[in-house]
Image (tube, rainbow, N blue to C red):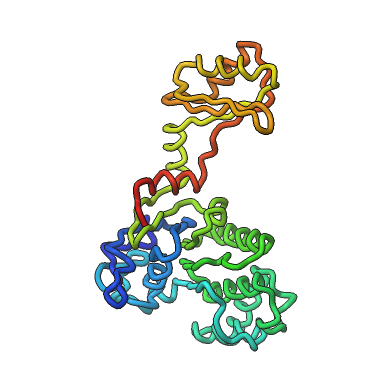
Length: 315
């Protein structure tokens, strides 16, 4: 049993002499929801197309479930489901006809095809519009239909290129909910996006891609823990009459590197510690009999990880 479902080793791809993916190394753990993060032009779509066997790398090796794609393309396609960033053709077909068409492309037929079409329509909440044509659907419903098509042959690996692209907030929430459900089913999901908020809630792992290379890759829970150990930012709000006394008390706490007072919108002290947990500041203020209106610690999220891991990189 391979711990990595998807493996890329020294993969390179260029177009017209321009390198788009540059000796990329990447491992996607089995059963993970993996975010491929990076700006437009970073090489995310090209990477996903190579993983999905739609284009071949110039050099390097790609393996799915331990099988080399250069030798086992057909086997890989049986366990892969690819969803492009745009819906594509066949918009005059009904949802049911659209799914039946692609189901037959996966050698499904008869009762098995009917069963699979019904299953993915139900999973993506499209039962009520099964007889409507795709060109009458909203963008969000079209994305769900594209995802339903991707799931028809029950693939173990889902490769999704910007699945929330162009969606309104409600549709983005619905797609995220669907992806969480797919993750809970044990599928390995790799998703590209340059919108960090789309990935924050659902991803277990991520990689940051810049200029065709992976500059960081790993578990989000692990890196968040590491960052929390390095950066203890905190924010304190107090009554106006206690502001200056609070600032002095905060500065006196061992380990506080910087503390500043801002008054716009009410007194607020912003500070940072090194080597100690910022909850010590709160304990010090309580001991000093200062009434704290609110106390919060700096959030370590995907945006913080991205900024930390791309420091010094010039695009």
